[in-house]
Image (cartoon, rainbow, N blue to C red; front, side, top):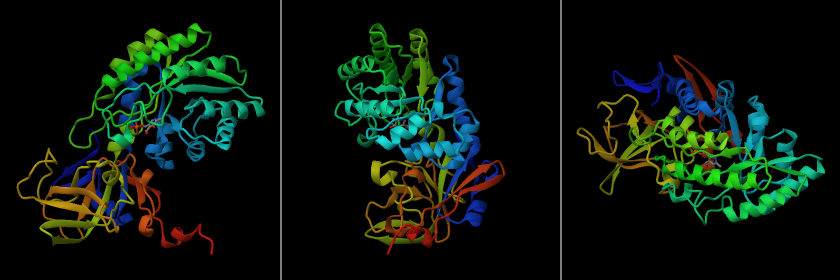
Length: 423
Ligand SMILES: Cc1ncc(COP(=O)(O)O)c(C=O)c1O
């Protein structure tokens, strides 16, 4: 579900033509639909309302201040993984007492910064980190709120690079170690064990891993309580899947159906860390064809977005729907099919890497120099993972609200590229 649609073979974002945005702001351009963002946040808020959860939008998925502000104003809190992300949510006006802080390598400075800002919980990933948090809290004469991140050894069946809850991943700890650390917290006045945390991987298109995870979570919470901890929080992380290929995403209510009853029965508070589900289908990457070429029996569409903008296809073999903004052929319902009037093409960027592509062998209508290309479902882990590789200035970002739009990050310039370098 999103608010991007074709009308008379012209792509609109809400009521705004994509071509108007490209003409005004240039390409490549990230375009976000505010209505789609809010739709997805509200879907989660509504589905889990019965247990009054804290929804912590996962900042890593898209950290633009304009997006964070929309989230903050709509009642979302935040999941951060660095001091930089903590700084961003403060800038966006977040209530930092509802912010959760994850990540395997928090530094003392980051821990101190989070404590100064009254973080809701650190998602603790190791004994060494727990010791560091205790030491920093002690030096500040504070009690640090912690949640132990469990590695529940659940296979969420995602890409190898995005699975996080299986034995052998660097994240979290097994249940035995969590129990040992819980015992350690009990004897330490600098620490308070508020809950447990898990993040299974991403994107997850079935509810089974969550059903399994919440059962394990409740078992652990009950053990902790039996030993005298006042453990109230279960944080099940993010990972809800979105529509990359067709309409494959589950509604938030499907996840709620397997999670909410267990949380209620255990009398726990629920935190969730959705990123992709909220922002993924809310954004597109708009680019312009520079050249087409036929070589080695293949058609290449060379356009001005590259792997430095959207690295997901190169990094995760990710599939994004791609279609022209003003196509000569109506968009298909199945973007993986062999389509009449179309021809297979590799959609590539200008970067000097064979891995620089947005799609390979994709059936597309005829395209020529100057045509606008749309890469859909690019709002999450798109701009957030972009770089300046090949000294390409980062693209601009625009937030659309109906028929109005505003720039939320200006396009970088050549001067920006060298601004931090010293000679
Ligand atoms: C700990 C944690 N929470 C939440 C998320 C957000 O996941 P998603 O954007 O798939 O919802 C991630 C993603 O890597 C994560 O590592």
